[in-house]
Image 1 (cartoon, rainbow, N blue to C red):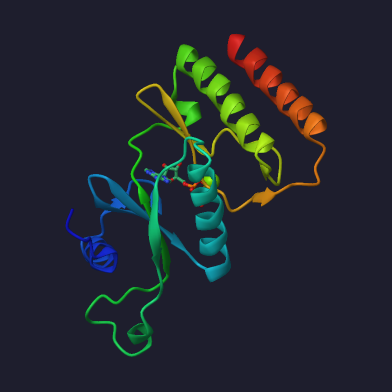
Image 2: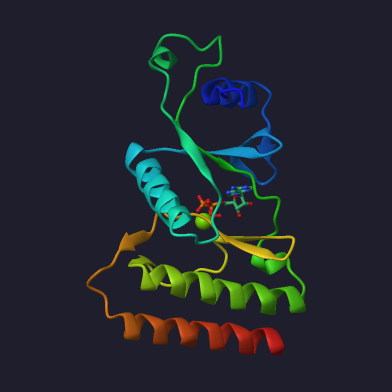
Length: 179
Ligand SMILES: Nc1ncnc2c1ncn2[C@@H]1O[C@H](COP(=O)(O)OP(=O)(O)OP(=O)(O)O)[C@@H](O)[C@H]1O
Ligand SMILES: [Mg+2]
């Protein structure tokens, strides 16, 4: 496979303003790749660290291809579309968000969310600020977890407690879908 120049793809997408509608900070690089614009180095590193780790554990998340750092020429030149922020390049998931799914899909997506998050927790990685089913994309019957800025390594959490919280979350959402 020819080596892809990710910076080139990001630069072209900025130039052509190929954004995901409503999400000005997600650039469409090509059919299979997007780049998430991120303001700080800390957030891009954290998201890519946990995304890649979860991927290596076999949790369903996008493939992470790399980080593109801001172009130092940005300060001097505004004419040749230099790269202005940190960008995290990842697999494009052509999916829908939870609230856009129909009832049956929601029930399926929720089930998958619970499975993926509990598998991640058993491997020692958990969301930091509670559960958020809006940080997912549902593509052709498969649920992908996205957005790992608020995840952490949690060797010290009580797994049983975490899983019971996850159960509560699952039951609450399931009840609200059924109504
Ligand atoms: N890999 C991807 N493929 C396609 N679209 C994506 C991808 N990652 C993110 N998006 C789009 O961008 C939206 C927001 O992504 P994400 O949750 O990572 O960003 P965020 O900064 O946390 O935004 P929010 O506050 O809306 O959660 C997603 O709901 C989706 O529409
Ligand atoms: Mg999010």
